[in-house]
Every structure is written in structure tokens, then in C-alpha cells.
Length: 400
Image (cartoon, rainbow, N blue to C red; front, side, top):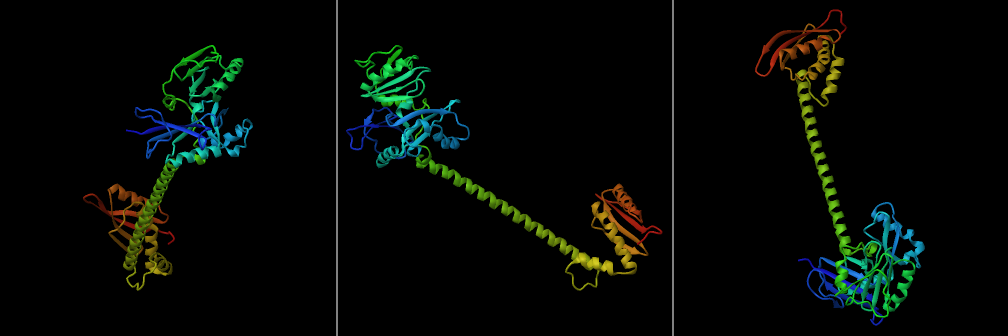
């Protein structure tokens, strides 16, 4: 079962630190108690309400950009509405933009730090800290009034709030009526459902009894779009740690992906290196076969090229002829050759291909080379391949 607590901090001139506190459990039947709860520990949710006397509710034009960009820019959007420097204030942005306006809550930073210290001394770290006056949303066009003992909290239809004692309420009501701020009616909650004596009842008054003010406020936590004052540097530590944990996991996954990529690259490099070594060994073997008197083989390709350029006579002609037709065999994917014989300007090659037509295609390709002609002298069909003997000669008058 989840454990949810609601704590209410209000001004109290008789308290040593000027703060009165009361609390209740929201997830179980109970009563509102004075002071701060003991043993909150790892509660699932701790919401703290602070007296509207300490917080100012404002609206600002809707701001563009991301949430973090709006949080940084909102102070400059309302600077002309504040009596204190913005550096000394905590300005919180509401979750619900409403499409046309930003809902804001403003509190003195030093006071906010003092309230948080009071909670920290009791081992409490809240998940959210809201002005109690911000929970007094009412029907569209109507004002909302809450009686909380000797306190009166009034929220007008435009979203502004007035918080004071009952004697101050006697001055507010006539002023609000004169400005048509109560033309949409007034929903009042609290006490035994009776209107305080000595106060004139405004037109459109709808009065409802509230047995427990803190329970009533708790029931509005999820429906009212109240700005959470714990933003920026005041964001709860466990939330910051949760975000850091997400970033740590992201870094670990990114590192793992990088290591995996490096391993794949290393494996590919090793496979390619092994293939190059195998090809180098095959070329060396072929070079020794073609040049039996070779004593040292360090670069088969260049060594064979050097021998081709430095040889003379029929050997040079044969190697030159092989060099000319070799790319055609490689392109036709018929290597390795089974036999090769060069005599008197004629090169005879025995090779295998997939079919007779494939052998004939090779013959035509070689015959298309300048100065060469080719013919199939024999064809022997076999299982899965056809063996053919190809005779290649230089055409009469062709340059060698």
C-alpha cells in the first residue's frame, strides 16, 4: 500500500520560528494532526502546502520553447510585476500552460530555504511544495473562498489570490464586488457551512461545509494545476539522483555500444588480416610454381612483374599472354585453372565452368581482346560443372 502524506505550513506569529505545521495521511483514514509527521521515511509521496501569505500567484503570456527554456525566460516576462529583484525570488512555472497563459507562483528564496530546513530537520524531503491558495480553482467565471480557522483564502476568476484573516475579508468583498470580480458567483467552503457573522453575503454565494480543511485541500491536489515551487536548484534530491541515474545508464549503454563497435571492428580487421595473409601465401605458392628457381619470395606480385618485364623470348611472350587473359578468367569466376600449357605462341588452358555456354562466353570475351583469338578444342560435361580446353593464340600480324 502506498504511503502519501500532506503537510501544511502557515505563518504563526506565536511560534518560535514563525511557522505553524499540521499534517495528515492521504492514503488512509485519519485525522489532521499538529506538527510534522515522524517516520515519513521512504514515503511514496510527500506533498507540502505553504500559506498563500508567502506566495504570489501570477499569469504570464505563453512562452515558446522547451520546459527548461521557459523556466529560464519566465522571470524576465514578469519582472515588472515584482516588487523585489528576481535574483531574490523563486519563480515556479505551472505544469498546465492552458494554451494562452503561464501559471506562476513566486516566493522569497530565503523563506523557501527556511521552510525546507524546517522539513529537513524532521527528516522530510517533499516531492512538491505548492501554495495552498493555488488549489482554490473553481467553476469557470466563479471565485472561490476557503475558511481555514481565522484565515481566509480567496481566489478570483482571473487566477489571482488574496490571503489574510477574516477582518481583511470584510474589506476585500466590497472592493471585489465593485470591480465585478464576483459577477460569476462565489463558491465558499469551510466551517459548519454558516456564513461568518458581520459579513455581508455577496450575490451568487454558494456555501458548503468542510469538515477537515486539510483533507479538502488534499482532494484537490490532482485536479488543480498548481505550480510546484521545487524547481531548478530546489528540485528534490531524489529526483535529481533519479535523473542522474538515467544519465549514468545512458552513459553505460553508450560506452557498451562503443566497446561493441570496437570489438566488431577488431574482429573484422583480424578476419581481413587473416584473409590477406592467406592470399599472400597463395600468391607466394603460385610464384614458386611459376618460378621454380626462386630462392627468396618477399613480394610475389612485383617480383613476377619484374620477371615479366625482364624476360625475353617465348617465356616472356607466354607470361605476357597469361597476364592479358587472366582478368577475363577472374571476371568469369572460373579460377582456379586445372592446367595451362604454352608452346610456340599458343596457350592452352583447361578450366571448369558451370555450363558449355559459360565456357563459350569466356571464349568470346578472350576473342574480343585486341590481337587474340580463342577456340574450344574439347568439352567434357561433368557433375555440377563442365570442363573445357581453350586454345588461345595471337592473330597473325598482331603485336606482342
